[in-house]
Structure formats: structure tokens, C-alpha cells
Length: 95
Image (cartoon, rainbow, N blue to C red; front, side, top):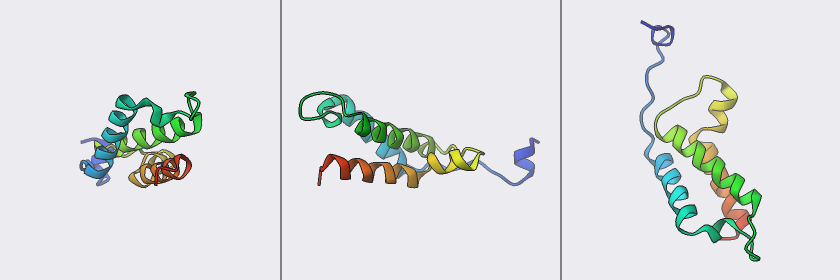
């Protein structure tokens, strides 16, 4: 038995909302690239950063992986995915 199993840390379950958010961001950026660009057609690096952070956090948490380091656990959590998406929407002015 490994050290983590003996300490009572089991496998994390799949988190559907985070996984769906990551898949939606992936498909949205692929099918409609202007979502991540400025009105002049150039890449908006802040929006791309937020979208990539939300997508990464969504996939990591969505498949059930929980990092051991607290900093990584925080930055790749479902809440981080939601925060990055909220900032994206706020900066993009979608709503």
C-alpha cells in the first residue's frame, strides 16, 4: 500500500461542471477564435491567459486530479476555473 493510500487520501471523483466548462472553452476557442481577440483582430493576451487558466483548471479538476501542493490545488481548482471565467466575461464584456 502506498503512503498516500495509508494516510486515507482516496481518489477524487470526476467533477462534471469543471470538465464541461473546460470542454466548452476548448471548443469555443477552436470554433470561434475572434472570442479571444481584440476588435482589430489581434490576440488579446489577457483574455487568452484567463481562458487557458480556466480551461487548465477545468480539465485538472474535471478529471478528478487533486494536486498535493496547496498552491497548485488552489490555482487548479473548480473555484479557480469559475474565477478565471468570471474575469474573462468581465473583461470581454460578453454580458
